[in-house]
Image 1 (spheres, rainbow, N blue to C red):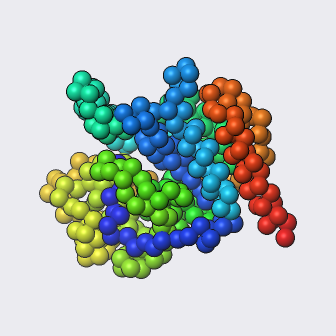
Image 2: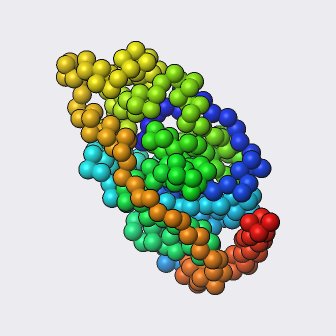
Image 3: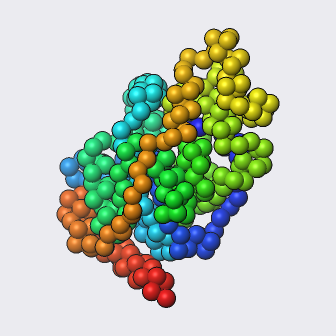
Length: 337
């Protein structure tokens, strides 16, 4: 779900040459869900090993991150911790959506409709504890920093950027921006297209800068949080009925202060959530202030995870390990000089 504010925030394309040498804090769940959803067979079946265990996420993490490391980026993967209780409603909506997708997928199977099967299978994506654990293990073996957030991973990413431990957040969602993350990179991939429910679309990396968003929209930090709440976040899905991004923007510009923004809606009984509580989540996110440690590459551990456990091609993995070693060597030389 996430915040639907993409139409009003200014953005610009960014090249990998501009990102070289930068540390990007990646919203791990956001990235892994993308891999699980998009890396599939034509009939929607995810990649699996000989024991029918899903490996789409491992394939995505391994191949995409080696490509990014080869471009000179340094990566921190930040994993979600405990969810705020207000997110229960969002999870319920997502589960209902999965049930609907399951019904449509089963019908497509009965009709032997390969295109529909591929379309609806993406809505069945689930991430379990085993997938999370092995994702962390693989990333660390690749020399990528892994961090366990106390709460929302995306908000922890923003904290790393605000404190100077990372240069930008890597995510498709906007929560990190609303809590003051200085820079947000979307479409962090060398691929030129992405599969969506509407078909393949052209993509390129884009940067969204917090200060530029505030300046061009003509709002301050608190007004930005109010805008997000009005439109609807994971903590108040749906927001205020009838209020889209443009109406929300006009409203926060007019009313200026949070109390004034929500006063009329409270009096009309149009709020089915406590706006102060949601505001506080964005204003004071649940994050930790800790240092980041980048582990050493462990090729044997990588081969054990991918080849021995999950039947990946040894030749392909070893070819990628050569690229990974070269990327790490270049990174070390850059640091040295």
